[in-house]
Image 1 (tube, helix red, strand yellow):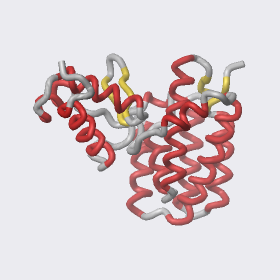
Image 2: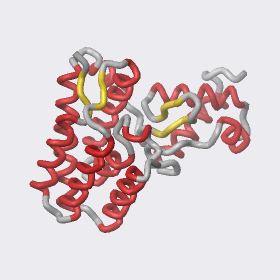
Image 3: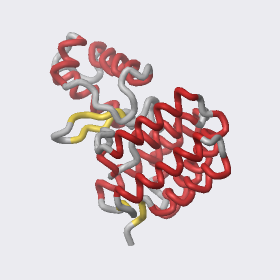
Image 4: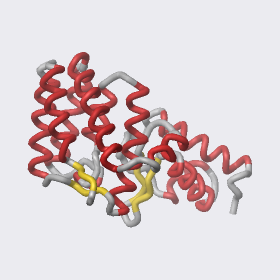
Length: 220
């Protein structure tokens, strides 16, 4: 087994990170299996396993037992920010998430390209069909990731990735829960998509604010 301090192991982490950051695997998509990556990179499966753990620690990947490993961020989640969030209440964290999503929606409506709109619409339709690849509504999926990307603000996107990493952990720990059913969530996504397609920043921000107010809530 290669130690993570070895040059081969470090190179495996670098190559996987480069693939993620290049967009080879979109956010919320599943990366190839451990065996496939080992064959592609010419290393042992134990080396792949350790590399995935390292990238999961950075917030870029998330192993989901029985389903595979999913891309969660195209950039490393700053560990210091993740630790910082741990000292704050879930009410505060969810309020910050709301602010980021409202800002992202407003910016996206202001300068969305036809290509980006087509991707957002495709993500919405995939979600309606139950195949968006992101826990089927239990956490923000491809729709939200594309929306934040459409803001054009890389700092906002990186902060949002930190918030999402914390939110997913909160859901796993039972400290946060979904606040609406799939029908309501998809309806609000449709309204948000319509506001962005209409290039109406004010409407997009209003819909995003209402949606973020109750899609996930802290447990008492």
